[in-house]
Amino acid sequence: MATNMTNKSRLHIPAPPARPGEAPNFDYLEITPPGALDRPPTDVKARDIEHLNQGMIRVLDDEGHAVGPWAPQLELADLQVAMRHMLLTRAFDTHMLRMHRQAKITFYMQCTGEEAVAVASAMALSPGDMLFPSYRTQGLHITRGRNLVDLMCQCLSNSKDMCKGRQMPIMYHWARGNIFSISGNLTTQFPQAVGWAMGAAIKGDDDIAAAWIGEGSSAEADFHHALTFASVYRAPVVLNVVNNQWAISTFQGVAGGERRSFAARGPGYGVPGIRVDGNDFLAVYAAQQWAAHRARHSHGPTLVELVTYRAAAHSTSDDPTRYRPEDEGAAWPLGDPIERLRQHLGHAGWSDADQATMQSDVEAQVTESWEAALRYGTLSSGPQLDRNEMFEDVFKDIPDALIKQRNQLLELDD
Image (cartoon, rainbow, N blue to C red; front, side):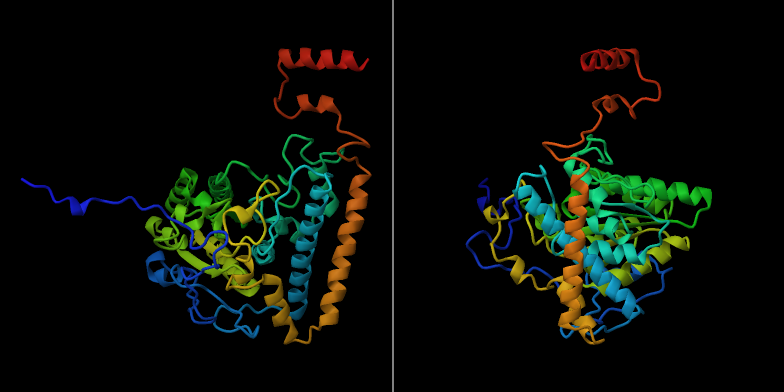
């Protein structure tokens, strides 16, 4: 019997919509008009809001007005604070990239274009909530009041390095500020956040957990483990997937973004999923506030997809012009989060002069902080970490073999 050879299956390989030298193409991006989606009660069931994981929660319209039921009630002073945090985050990033180019630090990762993701989230959450960041959410530290000198010293691996030289640059932590250690092992933040949240619920605490990963990380097994535990035990946690379109050089479609949104993965576990304009400060704030209220009132977890764009390189080890159009960032249809908030503030009387003054202030703060950080040592000079500290903080009781090695090192010092 003859075989019909025309029905062979074909393997689908997701491909980005545009490569270097081609025109940017965001036709794949589904964007909902601002204010078009309803804001349901926080005790809603996952199956009843599936439209919120296919549409996109947006507040700011093209003229910068806040529209629709998701518009948060924020005072002008709060919005000005938000602007300062975002400007400071970007100024910090710009300075540290310049220091890398001058060979004063060994590595850095910017969050250019994603500032609203971290700043709005931190402002919407409570100070006691435990944050499990990714390596592109430095705005969490800045919004919670972290001294920039501490962050800079970690990148310098000097005598004031919070990690004592044991972590690569930008892997910050801050116990007093309730910010967990950044993990280079992608997606581990999700199950860790769920576990912390379960522990808080067992103890009867009011605090919740929130975590951030990239959309590429959602393809890791830890993502599914976290969603299972969060759903089964109704853990008080907000799980954020930052969809910035690129996992290093891999387009978001490779992680499954072609078929449905990343937020749509939540309902399969019984977890509400909502998709949010990540470059709209007001929308991110409102979504985090809504999800946090759910968690704090025993309604369980929420999966939040924050749709944004990684405007800069993945890291200082990356050259994005090798895999995407050079002008793709400028064509991103959701704009720049700082410019969009600036436009909104303009309706309340915020002027170009006000913006310029604030910009100058944050740049001066970054410069002064860098000069202060250098006093604790640089890569080539100044006070260095005590190398004997390499034996500390690992074992409760140091094993004999390490004691012997430490003594040998001390003998060399003598």
